[in-house]
Structures are given as C-alpha cells and as structure tokens.
Length: 382
Image (cartoon, rainbow, N blue to C red; front, top):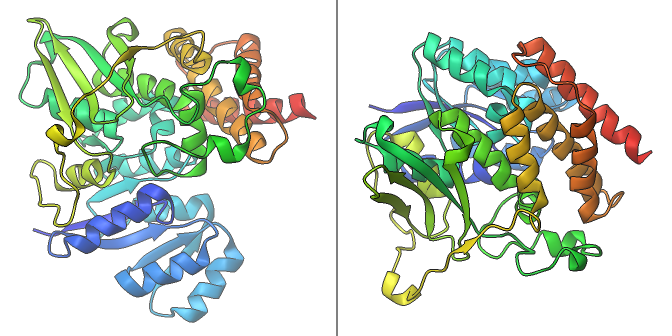
C-alpha cells in the first residue's frame, strides 16, 4: 500500500535525500505536499518531478509567482503554510526536515491529525520534547527518528525489553575540528568549519558538528525519545562513522547498528517501517576493507558545547529551549562572520547562566522564551 507523504524542508540536505528515496520507490511512496524556503529554482524542479497537491513557501510574493507558473497546484506560505502541509488530509506520514524550532508547531498539529512523524528536526524535541511526546501518546501516533544515531538506537532496541536497557551509547565523528586544541580553534574560518570529514550536511548542522552541539542536541533528543536518564547516555568519539550508535543491556550485551555514512538509510527506514526496502545502488559496508574501527573518550573540556547540552538537559524545563535558540542565533552570527567560532559557545553559556527556568512550560511560554533568547543573543553582539 502506497504511503502518502508531506515533507517539510524539501530543499535542505535531508529533504533532498528524502526525495531520492521517494523517487527510488514510486510504488511505495507518493509526495503529496511539501514546503521550501526561498529556493524557488529547486522548488520548480521538485514540482515538475513529483506534481504534488500543495506547496508552501516562505514568502507570500513567491507563492503568487509559483501559482501563476503551476496553476493546477495549490500554494500557501509562511508558518501557516507549514501547518497546512504537515496536516494535509491526503497524507499519512509527515517528514519534518526543516532546520530549527520552526518545525515545532507543525509537528504538534500533525500529531493531532494522527500522522506518523518521521522526525529529522531534532530541535522540535529539544525545545518542547515533553509536549511532543505527551501529544504522541494522547493521539496514539508514532514518532520515528530519522537522525542516523537515533535510528540506530531505535533499530538496536527493536524486539527488546526497554526496562533491561543499561545505557545508550551515541557515537560522534568529532566534526571538522576533532584534532584541534581549543587554542587552535580561536582563528578557524567558516570554510574550515564547513569541511566535515564524513557526512554531507547543511551549513548549520555542519557547524553544530564542529562545535559538538549537534551531539549535545542528540543527547537531549535521545533522553526525550527513549525516556533514558542523562547519566545513562554516553557519547564516544568514533572517527569512521560506521557504528551509528549502540545500546548496552543489563546482561552486558551491546546491540549496534552499522552502515556506511549515508543518511538515505535512516530516512528510508523511517518511511518504510516496520519493513525494509532494497537500496539499489547504495554503497555496501565492507568491514574487511575498513579493517579497524576506533573509539575515544569524549573530552568535555575540549568539547564544551557538549557539556552545556548535558547541563541544559539535566536542568530541564525551558533551559533546553534556551540552549537551542541561543545556539541557532549564535551559529547564524558565525556564518555571517560577526562572531568567532569559540564565541558561539561563549554566548550560549552566558545566556544559560542568566536564564530563570520555567519547569513545565506550555507552548506559549516555549515560543516566548525562544524569541527572547534570540533577541538577547543579538543584543549581546550589538
């Protein structure tokens, strides 16, 4: 039976790879609705290839332009448009691949419509995980992780008793600067930071990988998704990105999911779950060819952003919202060359130190804290 899909963030790295999967399995998946930002050229290409029913863009003026070019397709725009795509009546699966907390409201609305959520947008769970998981339970819908690490954990837990889990082990490649000391990070450039050794990702995620904030956000996401205490979530440096994450059980057994660094694998698994589909032209893992795998302990002093994420997660409440919003704002400033690389985590730490935590925030409070945090980061730099 064909699954009808809504896709938020179609022109980003995850979005484009999701389209590859849909194109590879036209009998299994059908793209009904999608959203893009301002990349109209790519949007036109997707429109011609997939002929969806509904498309949302960022600006109203862009929606009018596309409407004239594609009169048989319905266009919408803005935050309302994201919700309309996410809740389209003809779809059963929402792939949330937008960057940042902008994906939160549309995810919550899709859950209310009992859509299956294939979640690549970790910020949604970091910002408001308690609301998302409570809604998923209330409306009896599934949240399937698309992140390679969380997909690996999910796959490693399949068929197992969750009460027998001892700890989760997230693997980290170390990002662009894994071999640099903190002193050497003072003068690194945007070009340096965007040169990831293993994965092909968007600019924001690649910077997060370089600071190790990406792994910190994943720790919080793992805590929310699998209800595992922070003391039982470990991060290890694994340069090859072959083992995508592991689960240790109380009998000392460790289950791991291995594969080549290819995001199409976890994307496809989330779409096809509980089944597996063939990957026709994908590179297969050859362990003999690789020969050795390496693991190192994470140095929290060296990767300070990871420590900040653990601190925010343990503090709970609105502190994780502050962590995420401050990071998004600071990374944007770095990409605009307005702050240095190390100032990203300095700004995040300053704003966390000043924040008064609200322990069980509602959506309105979360959105307010998010907006105020971004404003405060901008003011610090001014």
